[in-house]
Length: 186
Image 1 (tube, one colour):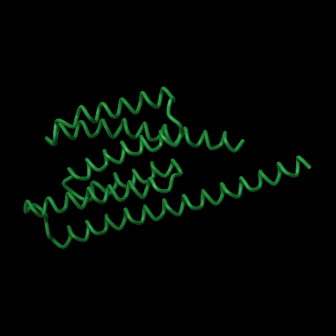
Image 2 (cartoon, helix red, strand yellow):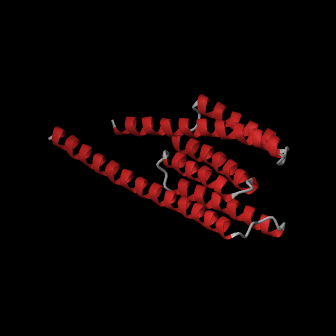
Image 3 (spheres, rainbow, N blue to C red):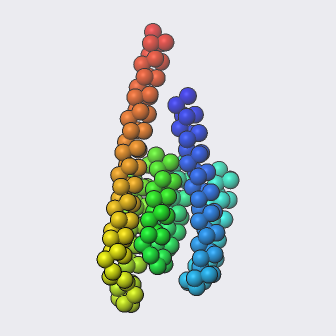
């Protein structure tokens, strides 16, 4: 029973990761073409998206390995987006979506890694714009940027608390099942 529950939840998580990878890969290809980013990355994006889809459909990977592989691809795509994004506020929504999708795996380290890599991309983008003299230092822009960074940090906190609650509920459910199984055997 408990393995079936975990398996169902895991397959939903992997499906969510694959759908997000396919959608985000499509968006990245379009943005890449329209905004004239590095065109050499387009084949890599397509190959990764198709490779993840084929791997998912074949079902050859364990749930945990699949979660890590698909999460890694999505995290790399988000990093690529945040590095190339011209405004921090565009990146915030993508990072928050990444946190939510990664939380479906119930692997607490994945949202942390996703957040850290997303923020590295944002910081790289900010420093690159400073170096090029293209960063607006207007008060309103600074406040908006700071607010968006705080929002993504709040999202990370909420996701981490949610995962902790889910773990406690899961542990309690498993404990109760074990007690019931022992009582039935007696």
